[in-house]
Length: 104
Image (cartoon, rainbow, N blue to C red; front, top):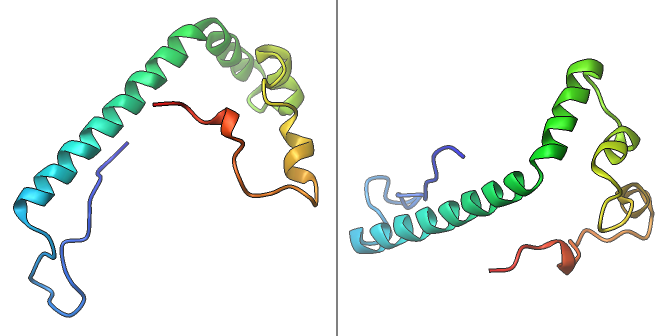
């Protein structure tokens, strides 16, 4: 993921933090917990779909570039519907459907 950081300076006071060391430790712990949870969920999803991932990798080795139909042929139809029609439609909203979000 890379470094995760919070601003440590106020614009008017370049050498002062605007939160305590205790709060900084609390933020670090919370971020580590959230990133760790996301990492574990990602591992579970990848493990459950390892065959599809390998098939996708093999197809990429032969074709280099895959379009939506190529990917759908390997992975199967999107469980949330064809995204091309949803995102190319003038009526499409910028919101993510609740059914696509991971639960806690």
